[in-house]
Length: 226
Image (cartoon, rainbow, N blue to C red; front, side):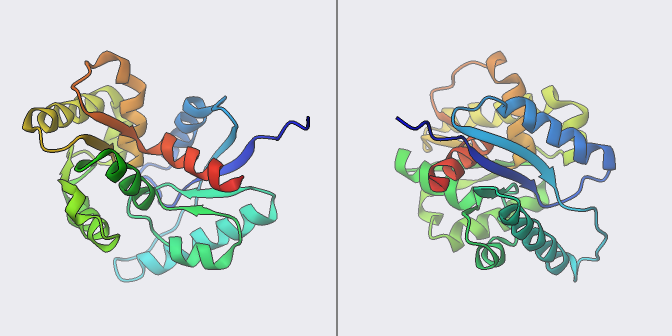
């Protein structure tokens, strides 16, 4: 019987950290966490560093994500995860390539709804709350969501102290569990998710499903690659 090779998946961070070294530090965390993930060869990378004002940010980001996706396909990747819970540039990247392009919020919201009937989302900063809620509604999942809560730390601060970020996430998870309305918690921000996974074993089981958005996005990419 022929053994199927592992799916080659690009975990593409579509933004830059304020501190350039953290672009690479985050890639390294993802590599360490998912090296040896069953059936998946994970390559973590980020878009070229760019500068843009608020008006041009999305268009510049989209151009870079599309460029990286086209290159990934040309280089033989089986799929791409656009690793941000805003799911930025995904429609354009899907149009530009024939390989699967995974939108983490779209995928995780659908999965959490299967565990339902309700889920809660954790993000990084307060400014991300409303866009994430709007995205959930845009995917037709507002009726499944009990809301979005931020740990109130940006990406660089999270990487500076991953345990502190994980503790803040765990407090939110505990509150969601005590509230009793949601059955699942999506660690929505990819950076918060990575930080939480570094310390997950330190926290008790609060009785709700805690979904590792990075791992599940990669698993979804692998399934669609096959």
